[in-house]
Length: 315
Image 1: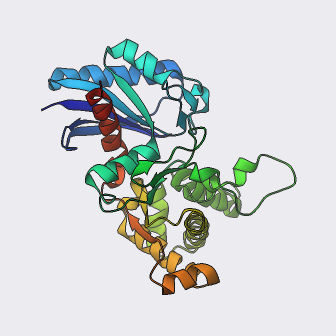
Image 2 (image 1 turned 180 degrees about the vertical axis):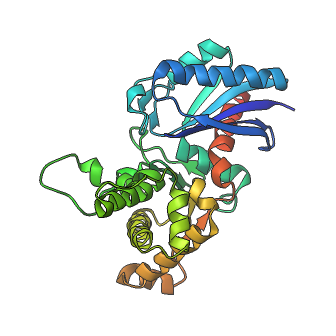
Image 3 (image 1 turned 120 degrees about the horizontal axis):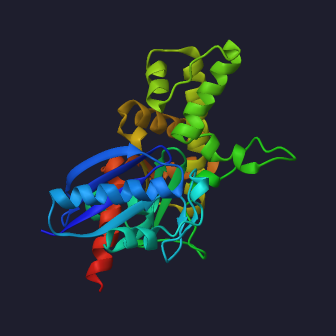
């Protein structure tokens, strides 16, 4: 059976795997994400060499990325990996590996994967919101990925809703800095604790640690988590008002946590009741559902593999 190497690039980690023609992951792992071009490309190409020694019939490489790759696989922006904006990722990795390479936005890749073998199979109009270092979004309309007029649709993390000052960088008050798991939840908790303890505090390094504190009824973590949930849910409500999807699927590493998904759904119900228009829609049985992705943290890899699989079949 044909096989594909898949990379899911995050601001903190690169997940990699080998995926077959049915969408099954045969091998997976993760490494830290280098922040500059040379070590980044070396890390990817070295993993390809290792995988090729272990598996035969590797036909191509699919890469799921934060930000916006153009049609030639050049990173117009690259999420939090700002030192690699403009990287010709497709061309350079192809030159290093001599394998076909396809580059796809991470949330689009997740949406594609869910349509292939996951929770999106029964829907024609849906969204995937990927919560990670930042927030990505994939929009599916009439069974097709909606890319927008310039190929940058789905940047759900760029959305603004409050806290805007008269001067200064607006993206610092965007959803990326409010309801992403790393730049939002984790950063906000660390900032709060630094203020409370006058910098006499060892920063947490994973959002899961904040969730564990919430479950243990830590007061500061609980307050920060509720603010995170509120900002996230407002974003979901705005998307629902604009697009009327059948469902919004929540993905990213945090979506594997049952407690977090339940709390998102609870906050959704709580705030919908307070919105006359959306609550009216709910009463008619027409409101968007909020669910988690079936493929959870593997969706980006599986979607990346699918994109290169389809690209090769079209040749």
